Length: 94
Image 1 (cartoon, helix red, strand yellow):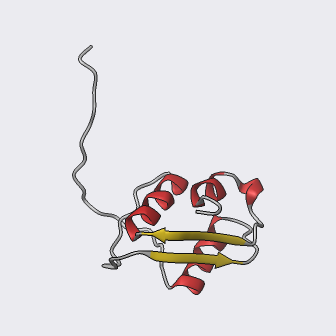
Image 2 (image 1 turned 90 degrees about the vertical axis):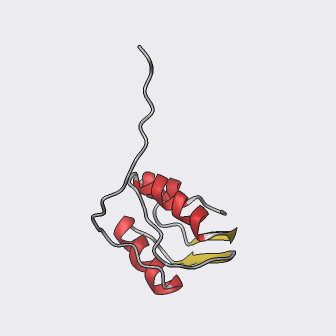
């Protein structure tokens, strides 16, 4: 990615950048970047397979604006949802 989505979302001072792009990325790789940036699980329900070049252009003021621009410019929608998911927990023997 030219500018990692996770960095943009974690650091509001970076907002205002005019171009975010992911070249040669699968939806799963893009989902992982979004997940790290948002600090919560992101589940890909697009059903899209293959490799994509994703770009978001414009002045991003906050996370909500990024989500809106992502939807408008790529057709990808991020929305809050509740799911029951199985997780694996790693613990030490101590």
